[in-house]
Image 1 (cartoon, one colour):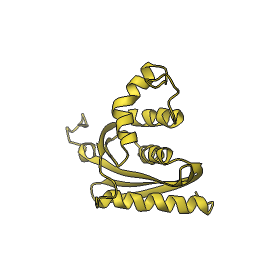
Image 2 (tube, helix red, strand yellow; image 1 turned 135 degrees about the horizontal axis):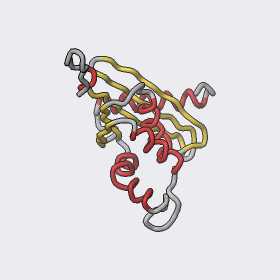
Image 3 (spheres, rainbow, N blue to C red; image 1 turned 90 degrees about the vertical axis):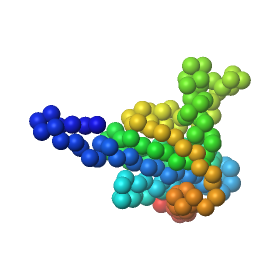
Length: 162
């Protein structure tokens, strides 16, 4: 809790949580890809999307979270909701071991998407983040909105607007 030492008042925004609902999409794997983020802070919502050519679904899933965290102006309490077990397990379970092994997998190979995992770790370190997995395409309203945004990102990439 942030307190102002002169008047002992509470900064109400410090107690609020930013929810990020993220998704990635890919038309072909590799192929045209997109990412989408629905950000919610109290009653305020913001959406983000983007895309790339010749990418993979996993890269777009990672990019969605990275871009959502980058959009936050200051350190926050954040709840990231993703339908990607790759992202959720990667950040929660696998990342510490990859770092300890010098970015090698348990089998000794190089970690795929290392550039994005490093960037995600850097962005997540700026915040107090909780990670939640949600089942994709199962009627979760915010996840469905993130999916629409990710597909919009694919469209923008195809049109050269991302």
